[in-house]
Picture (tube, rainbow, N blue to C red):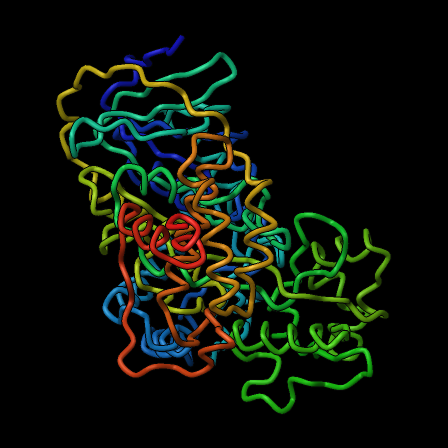
Amino acid sequence: MTELLDHLAGRTVIVGSGLAGLMTALTLAPEPSVIVTRAALGVETSSAWAQGGIAASMGADDSAALHLADTLAAGDGLCDPAIAAGIIAEAPAAIAALVQAGVRFDRNAAGELSLGLEAAHNRRRIVHAEGDGSGAAIIAALIKAVIETPAISVLEGFEARRIVMDGEQVAGLLCGTANGAAILPTSKVVLATGGIGGLYDATTNPMGNFGQGIALAARAGAALADMEFVQFHPTALDSRRRPLALVSEAVRGEGALLVNERGERFMARIPGAELAPRDVVARAISAEIARGGRVFLDARTALGSRFAARFPVISTLCGEAGIDPGEDLIPVRPAVHYHMGGVATDANGRSSVPSLWVAGEAASTGLHGANRLASNSLLEAAVMGMRAARDISGMPAGATSTISAERLPAPADASLVRPIVSRHLGVLRNAGAIHGAIAALLPLAEGNGPAADPAIVALLIAVFASLRMESRGAHARTDFPLKIANANRRRMCLSDALEIARATPPYALARSA
């Protein structure tokens, strides 16, 4: 039995309760909205796990132009400069909006914002809240603000399964619930569902985050962009815990060094050393591990006994693994942390599907290019959530069309997809691995089983990776180790990706045999 929630008809429906989703709802108020979230509000979001803060050029020696230069350098030639400049310019306004919503950022004795340093930033510009617990502190404050805002309704335990379309127009959202199925009639949907880390075994993201928003939008016909660019954070705590615990870049910003099992500081010979862009550090660590070695963070000299006070969350996570970071080496390895790709959007979060907005990690705005600069993700989530809300504000609800109940798809399950993606679409790629991923993923993506939606997202990553015959940013190919001249971003719809996949060997050969 499918329940039609017509008492909520016409409201903007926001899928996801991380930073982008919460900021969309709060900025839209007093216009009514509905937040749909599979778990409890703010739970299972990467935002709440963020140890880094928000990049904002607010120091006396800093400027938006310097922040933009660092962003473009990390993006390795594929950032959209106009989009990046606009988002970066709004950083102070985003910080002010968060403060107004109740976020208490760390400040020095003079009452000024404390500014931290992270990799590939040439100025101290990272704004934190409660040290390395920034994400949790920000989300907790925003949840309180949402609960206190009468215009915002929250539906917990609702999992978005399909966007209901009326021709080319959004007509509603089909959700799975504890009681079966429910449809929210609406002509305005904002996807703020987070990233794709759950497609991989080694990730710092919630394991349930497989790119739900990308799958929803792709099935609705939206264009995707930059799907091949998956960022591996260089320093996840190397343990059996899943997901892996993150050891923030800020630890290296405070002077911690990377060493191998022989005690050699292998990053010293690389420009930027420990504070080089994430893709550079991740590949260097992967190379050490590939030769059978291990890699450690050494914070004993830089921080020593001060480690626990400066990084209480990381200290606790290390303690759970039997490590005292003030006295012991911290074993680390790369893990999937962020996806630069996603649903292609404009400067206001609009996708190619009318009345469908996407904000946060699920979107590809052009800010990050081929590789994200540290702490630009929370900045983008806040700014784009606010922009989407301003774009929606004042729009008429639209006529509510008659929605026919469709079959509720099974809950998604990435367990069949995870080993394929982990094996074939890692830090280093080549044609054989990419084509192997396509061959394994295509039947799952074309099926109707629980693996279909995760497989669609993974297949998009593989198809985009097959077409980028170069190494750039977070996309590194051993068979194409150099950059090509005049590289561009790529946009594609799911239907086009499926056609390319069907024509890709060895799958094409198997079909013709």
